[in-house]
Image 1: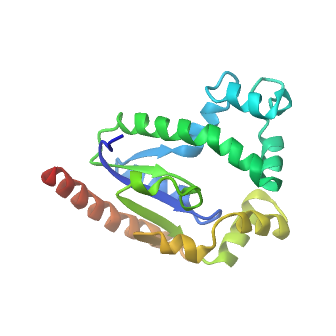
Image 2: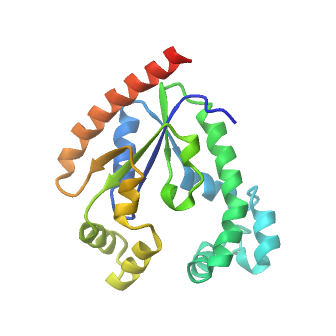
Amino acid sequence: MSRPRFTIGLTGGIGSGKSVVARLFAAHGVDIVDTDQIARNLTVAGGAAMPAVLAAFGAGFADATGALDRGKMRALVFSDPAAKARLEAILHPMIRDAVYAASLLGTAPYVIFDIPLLVESGTWRDRLDRVLVVDCPEEVQLARVMARNCLPAEQVQAIMAAQVPRQVRLAAADDVVDNGGDLALLAPQVDRLHAFYGEMAAAAVRNN
């Protein structure tokens, strides 16, 4: 399946500020395709993934409305790697197809795929022209998520431990946004990258 436009994969650990960076790019008119939202759409009541999910895990994984019981599924896949693999085998192909379809609808020179587990999945790299990582120190991640979600440190640390280590994520990056300090420093970084990606997208069109 060919890629219709210059594509950027945006990722970052929990609490890194990836969503803020996505909004800054969107303010430039960049098309943002949110893979988490696509996954949620697939698992609402009547969602395209629900028949396969319930066949694999049982009717008890639907809530009273018929949507995926996210809390129950989260608890299962967090403790059972085989269950996580089964769920991903159902969702990931559907998500990739939906991401491709959504990317065709935009008009900006390049499109950003917002993929929280880009590095963990191992299946996105050949669909992307660049990988952009939003980075901050782990202690900053911990403090942000504890404050935002009102979670104890141990629970946040467990979530972080389930993601790839910071250095592995950075090693996969073509570009990095530093979000370890003042939020006011984010916009200039995004401005520079937006200009850079625009130039690269234009060059890709000329070369095709």
